[in-house]
Image (cartoon, rainbow, N blue to C red; front, top):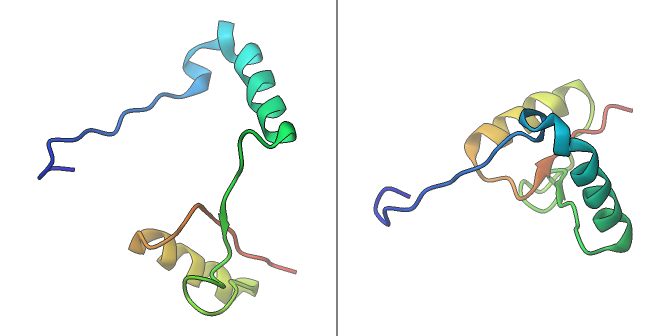
Length: 78
């Protein structure tokens, strides 16, 4: 980001309580219709083994902090 003078910007939907209902509905409908997808990283493709159990939680957090995750990091406990 620094070398390209790029910026990452965002906001929290909860900062706009009057519009929260509308956008929550929009996001829900987009997920249901397939227009919006969620990518989950359970470690299988990036580390070679799935994040499972208590040990998996530790590995998942380390993976998240490494910045190598693709999507949301998910650990299966049971």
